Image (tube, rainbow, N blue to C red; front, side, top):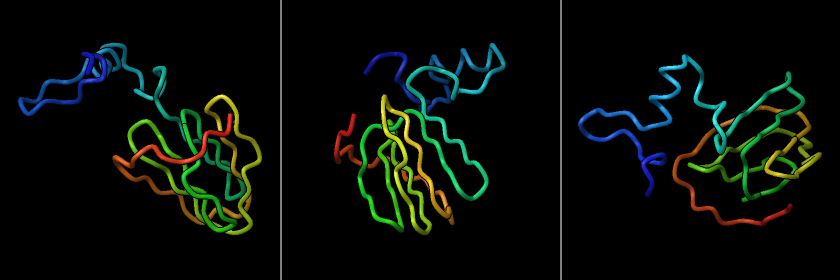
Length: 110
């Protein structure tokens, strides 16, 4: 594990990316290889930084992220686009939830 990927330690030290973000007063999601979730009303969700589709039904679409997974639940959900780690999901969005440490198994689409 590189210094960049190191998480907070038991003694409270921050990782290198966390220190940079704090010093520059920016959000961690602007760094490369982080996930960004954008919700547009109740009809669309765009996820950048996703890797694989873990589950796909018209009621739930679950995507692997670098450090877990995101699950979008609703009605008539469709994956409108999936390319270069950016996914757009459309339909009637009812909930968006995150899971930690999900194994990255699923289907590579792009």
